[in-house]
Image (cartoon, rainbow, N blue to C red; front, top):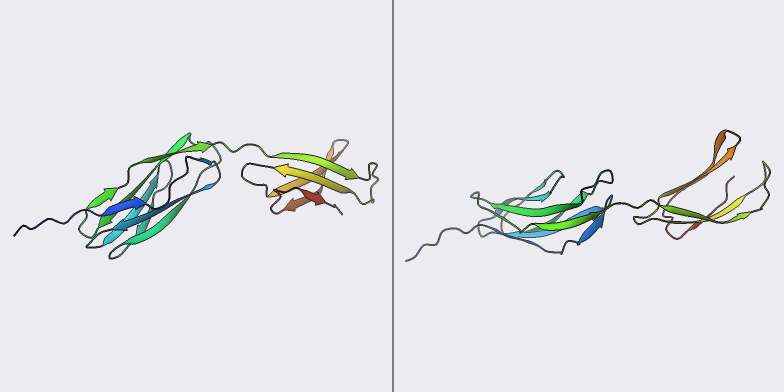
Length: 169
């Protein structure tokens, strides 16, 4: 009779990680861990960010962890490793996967039309704009400068990726 010792758990990424991600976006790491005696925890590590631990149970365990990539001073890349630990303390890790971080580009806004072309205080003013951004626009703010003073004449907050028409009041 040959008695084989218990083997460490198996761990794998269940969805491929992107080759790159834009700073400010969320990196999702999907994984699956298995062990004949059970998995006690799975730790997902993205270099430079706080590791995330998932408590687990018997048999196969699947899950995911989300990491917000910082906009300010993002690293050039991060390494992702997922480690599973079984009930007797044995661990296994995935091979490190490197994900490049692309800096967030500045948004662009173009005024398409202003109606009427001459405006007096109290008159209605229609401003049609188009905006673009690599991670999506959330807000466009309209300001008017009179002499040295700056007045906020309107602001929109919503998905603005297809351009908007704005009617300040």
